[in-house]
Length: 249
Ligand SMILES: [Zn+2]
Image (cartoon, rainbow, N blue to C red; front, side, top):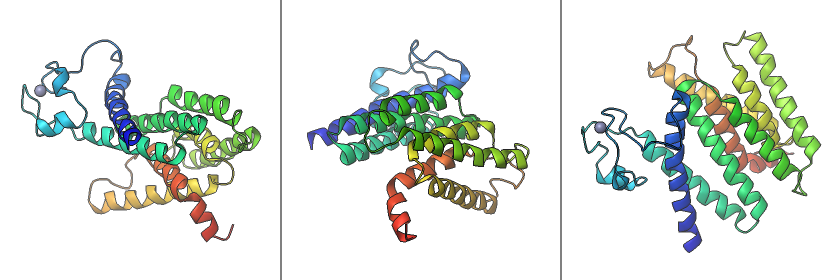
C-alpha cells in the first residue's frame, strides 16, 4: 500500500512538471528558471497554491489573485500521470528494467499527447529521445524483445503512415506523425503494430465524427493525429493480447 501511494504521489509531481513543460516549451519559455505564474494575470503562484490537484480543489479552480478560472488541463494531466504511474507499478513492480522503461516511455507519450493536442506539433526531440531510450535501454537489455523485430515494426508502421501522408498530400497525416510511428512501432513491437494502427484510426475516426456531429469541427479542419496514435498505443498495451486471441492469432 505504501508503494502504491508513493507511485501516485510521484505521478502527481511529474504530472505537475509536465503541465509546466508542455505549456512553456512550445512557447520558448525556460523550463528550469522562473516560478509558475497565472497565465491570465501573470501573478506568481505561491508554492502552497501549486500543490498538484489539491490546490486546484482548495481554490475551487480559480486563481487566488485574479479569481479567473484555472484550466482543467492542470488537474487532468496530473491525475492521468498519477494513474499511469500506478498502473505501470502494479504491472511490473520490482522488474526494474521494464518498470523504469515504461515510466519514461509513458512520460514522453503524455508530453507528446498534450503538445500535439494544443499546438499540432510533435517535437522531434521527444520522438527521438523516446526511440533511442527504448532501443538502447530496453531492446538491448530485455531477453523477450528482439532489436531487429522492434526496428522492423517501427519502419513498417512509419512507412504505412508515410504512404497516407503522400496520398493525402500531408492533409491527413503530418510528418511528425510519421516520425512518431517509428517510435510507436518500436515500442509496441511487430506483433501488435497492426492492432495499434487500427485502434488509432478507429479512435481518430470516432472522435472526428463526434466532433463534427457536435459542430465542434468541420470535415476540412485539421485535427492532430498524435493523440489518437497515443490513445491507440495505450489501448494496445492494455487490450492487445486479448484482441489478438479474440481474432484467433
Ligand atoms: Zn490570475
